Image 1 (tube, rainbow, N blue to C red):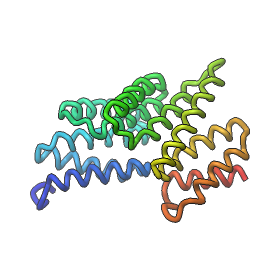
Image 2: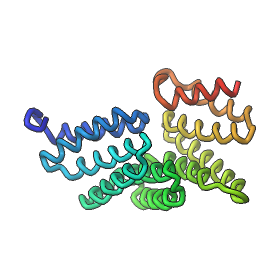
Image 3: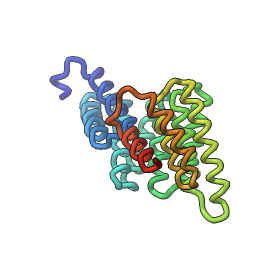
Amino acid sequence: MARSAADPLALALGLAFAAQLHQYRRETHRTRELAEAAVTLSDERGYPLYQAWGVILQGWALAEEGSHEEGIAQIREGLIAHEATGAALGRPTLLALLADACGKAGQAEAGLLVLNDALALASKTGERFHEPTLIRLKGELMLRLAAGKEASSCAQEAEACFQTAISIARVQGARSVELQIALSLAQLWQRQGKFAAAREVLTGILGSFTEGFDTVDWLQANTLLADLS
């Protein structure tokens, strides 16, 4: 691949960005394929930043497919390599992948620690693009942490996170991100028996889409709305 590419550096960047795009869409298989290609090319040509980025995305895909511990270990390995490059741009997004993987592995407390670091870094650097997703993940992790007498307070904090995240996403005009958050909020309200509120939040965001009807988030939200009707 590296020998045949006219501009291997641009190709490595393009592969990493494409893998990240498919991660946003939660398309695990395609994320892994493109990330592996980015890692292979970066190893051949010596592009440590894109190599680290690809390793992180590979780890996310592994965790999503159920290999939680292996995926988390790979994400951590990639984050260490990413930090060694001195890069700061995009790091909160990458930390969010680790937090998400920790949560799905039943390590909600560890995920929250990582997520707090990501939010602090975003605040420090002013990189707010991924802020609504970070706040949504905090809400999801709070729900995973909920147990016993703390369940009610965790649910309240999670709902507040989702409401805040939706407000930020709307200001940003990030409708795909808003859809993800609305789905999280509607799922919470469904569990709480607040069916009318869940329908309303989903109807509002789904009705604003004119394309993207094949994405994982849109399909899940549409299915949930049908279940609530």
